[in-house]
Amino acid sequence: MIIILTLTATLVFIICSAIMFISSILAKKTYMDREKNSPFECGFDPKGSARLPFSLRFFLIAVIFLIFDVEITLLLPIAPILSVCNIYSWVFTSVFFLVILLLGLYHEWNQGALEWTE
Image 1 (cartoon, rainbow, N blue to C red):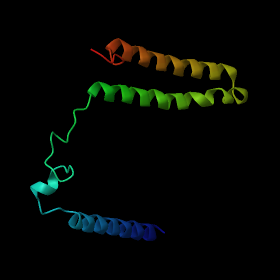
Image 2: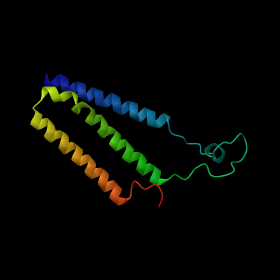
Image 3: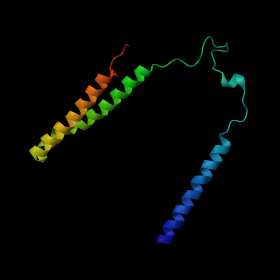
Image 4: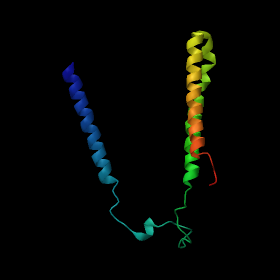
């Protein structure tokens, strides 16, 4: 049984390595042309840079929103589970989780991460 698993794992490793090697060979761009690497604007030379400046403050607000959005999905099952578990453990877990969330929110607020303007 161990020999079969070893042979299967070796075969999978060889197949994966071969596919990765072939794809790296086929995907290489060897011809570097300035015109092909430049941004295209209806056949004209670009007026400005194709790279727009990105606000790091906006990115930080978006990441904080995503973190708290995921935590909201963790809070949703708290109410329906009340009827099937011990009330003391439910209260302790819920309050502990909410305190962690509020401490995180206070820390972000205290550090000024929630301020949009400087």
